[in-house]
Image (cartoon, rainbow, N blue to C red; front, side, top):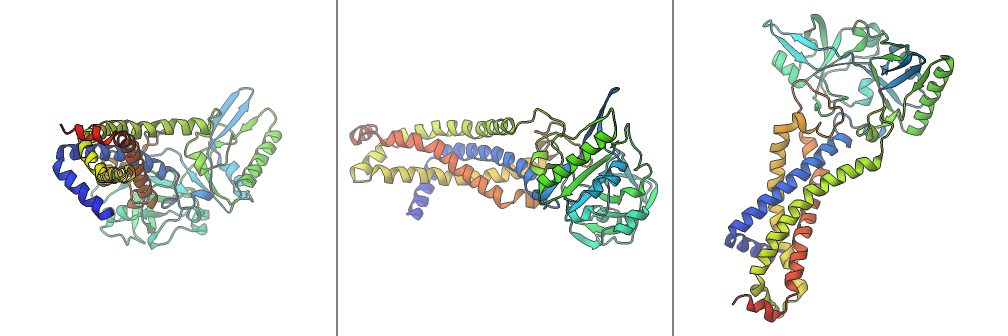
Length: 424
């Protein structure tokens, strides 16, 4: 039966090329926009390289210190990190990124400078973010404790600087300071701002990492935890904050919902006290429905006109014993096959669109978008994820039902005689 439907659809496509072209292109555009929407949020929340442990990842990035003289909000200080946060017991991994907003450049042998993204981190970084090392090894505890000027770089950077990916043992000049390359990793994507960099170095190799910026608790550190029990982790950190507040009369510390799980961190700014999951879902649902239903209405109008043109054909088939259910299945299969053709084209358009606009597309729904020097790349595991294909297929099915079911049902309700007279 399916083979018969395919033959009938192919004949219909050849006979009605204008309708076929408009229907396929309209479907492709609808699926391209909805699939791009899905990919944006898949990349935000799914466990993608190197953030494959997102389900157990928690973030602590802001603290507010209130006093009689006002309040000061910032990232965490080194002293607070070292003396309190690194000692948290309910975390399997605690790692920190020192973000001092500094620009980094590599001095090349031809006297030119190459701007790079650098993350100054500790040696626990590699236990949370699972990078694929192509050469060498990560810097270890001894390198970190001694402030060793060692660096882990990405494959594209190694190829650009040395003409090969196996660059272990080579030297780079980073902001006029020599660093030795200890390892080379497969790069992540700039979409994943928390883990992305061209170069990873021990933050102890930078001057001033242990300085405070306004209070004993404010500095430049963002903390990441890996924990199986998020409630226990949060309770422990809340306890630390209560003790620190009581130990500093006149000061009140606030950390809101932190440490927050990855899903919440992907949508909530840490100090957004009015955050509501319903507001997030409502906003995204409205966007999704507009992207899907508006094209469905247009396609439904086209199908309705086409069904009026086919009423005589359907009337003849009814007169020879075809039931309404058989005819309805035929029409829906025809529309589904056309929708699948549009879906394939839509996936191609999505790939082109995302690669052409990724620098702004992935930050379009962010409250405070982060800018990545050198632009954003989309890796194949992000685009060709099984869940993306499943979503695209479901969009095809839903679009087919929304656009084809009602016009087909209405047309097939016409009496046989009425349908046959349409030919006259």
